[in-house]
Image (cartoon, rainbow, N blue to C red; front, side, top):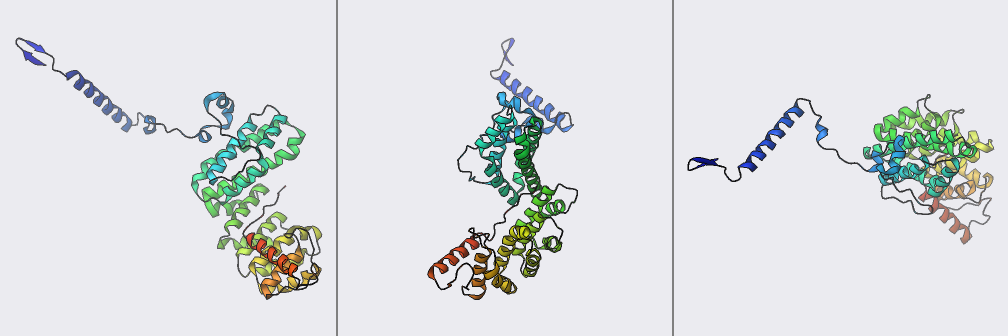
Length: 362
């Protein structure tokens, strides 16, 4: 206010100054209340997250009504090559959402087939198992919760087709997801703990052991050795240990001993034999030469070169000796066609040397 003659007149801009003063005072009181614990610090701003992090599986009906937009499910026939593991997991979570709200078993099956989940799920879980960044842990946990909810939904429907085919596959996906989440959160120590926990589900222990085999740390060899030397060990755990042995130099003797042990068992030989010979080929140990030379004549043949013992022996003997030996499959080792076939098989085996093939655990 300023004096004009005998009366006071308001000063221009005084109202604005007073308003700014009141705002400053209110902010000061608010900050004081916050510091004294009257208001939580996070109440001032809430960061909006993508729908895959916002949507709990028990509120899908509200979300589908418009509360949140679901992730787009993969279409049948499209390429599932994703830019990174996080994107693949988000797509997987989005592909599970339509199945959770399926009204009946027929609709669930149709949506399952349309999303091509049988292929996409295992590719995504392979990427997740190899992830070492904690940045995917939250999305993996979302996928895990969706799989558990979908298991409850499928069991409640009680359809014979779902019980026979889909529920066992969902259980394997859930165990593989839980094992991958353990590896992301707790690393090698967590995977080792799950793999050796006899109270844990068998499939979860298997996928934890597979994660260890894919990372093949030096200190994990005693665990693989135990399965290789135990005659009564579960075949799936022995298979993982066989494939992991290719990363440990000087361990070919365990594989040779195992092959001789299962040689007369046709079922175990068909299952473990290709894996044993593949790891021996990668190791390239001279101690395996007598075994491969015996398989040139007495080995099993198969149109699939990954399962053909004679083809594997031809490649291994050529690597160890530098020559193509006579075999039951090719009578003339000097034939140019034979040489081209062996060289093609060798290139194929070299390209697959770091590929560990999971087995189905029932």
